[in-house]
Image 1: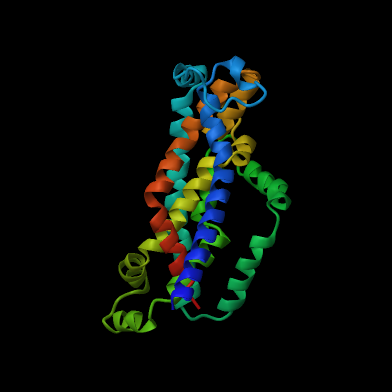
Image 2: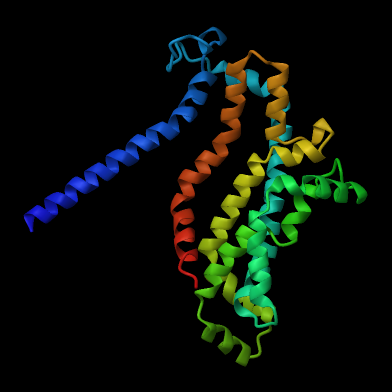
Length: 280
């Protein structure tokens, strides 16, 4: 018994040591970004790398915010992210409810086709999608970046929600139907309240994707007043090619809301994935 406990302890020590080492490796770029944001420009390219700025230049953050319209881009990014989260949660959950709890001809085949679209490279769809939005007159508006979220929400989100919905007993829904509840009432008052963990997970990942999306705003938004933070940072780099300390300060401010959000809600994200994986 003692030998088994000792072996278990050794395995746990090895496991946590390996995980700690990998965590440090993955955190090095983040640490370098924050460190560089506090350096004087002369310290940025010093070899060997000077990991700790001497002294810290907190003024860099003020200068970075003043160097480009940070708060306007922050508002544009937040606006698009919120709309994408709302649209994805609504449309993807509706589609997932249909795939999991409604019986109709060709349901499984269409679900497999939906999942298969995940394997189509996004680069293949760039030109036809741009031509479609151009014909509709949506270029240089937010519509190409928002409307798709209200039209299904993406195959991955549909799959994630469908897997969770499958795990909810059908008897619960049948009892509601016997009581005269409509399908939309069952969906809105029974399915959604029971699905808060996976809905939260979908909303987090949608928010992350929308917040960090660079190619979409770059392709469709031509007016600098409508740019997001991702595109704004790129223009900042072109304008201040050698001012890496200010660029890293602006990048840190851009990433800070997502970092805080992840550490606050990481348990909800993990539980959402765990529960979704229990579907059949």
